Image 1 (cartoon, rainbow, N blue to C red):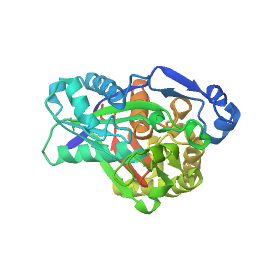
Image 2: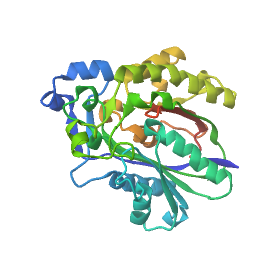
Image 3: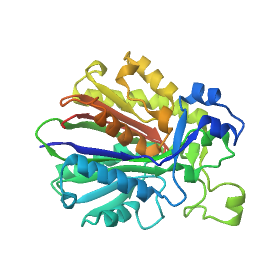
Image 4: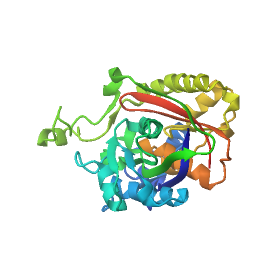
Length: 325
């Protein structure tokens, strides 16, 4: 059985926040941000928008692109670290908005979330439990940001991407590699808001309700694990980096992507990059990139693609698949 992507979709909020806008809020400037990250602007959710709103719009687009009836969707997985609520799941809210009868759950693996969710959706179909699965990566990251923290507020943006997985005539999923290293959990976390440290007046005053990140350690982690997980799926697929038509990396930092291109002796033309427009949208970066590459005609049937994620958890992983649309 071949299981691949039947359709793709994405949604980005309308509001744009540029580097020059940020320079009016914190001690930074466009050149500093651009040279260190590659980011020029990012999208910001409206006051009345939440993660489920972004996910729903991306999902509708993916279902339309797949050319299927929405009622054929039997499972919805939303990869997110910014759910609407602790409970219910964002996926359940999307299920209701779509007006379909389907199983639904959220998956939390931070910036690696979509790779985890893609592999999970594939596995459900492979096991014969479901025939079509809607996999969404959606984030309202700016809701977690301390806008006085220059180390994080320049990096993140909001958005959602989605794919419909199902049986295909050819191509599809080839291999995946999923890893977690919880020993680095403290390097990227929101300390307050869970059962360990519930929100209180004290945690609000100490800004523990916002994202805290050790940028230097995360950069070192990414540069180390990125090639490791790519080599794993290439070995499973019995191919080399030269055989890959397009790498779709997590859009965190242009320097990380450039270092990996150099490591594998590949041209940057083989790496899809859109972080200059959207910043780091965590679990949404990869599915947004897949949808844009699809809409731009960058993907041809039979192309070998490698999607790679890394982030909080710490988590990392990759998936190798053949384009089948």
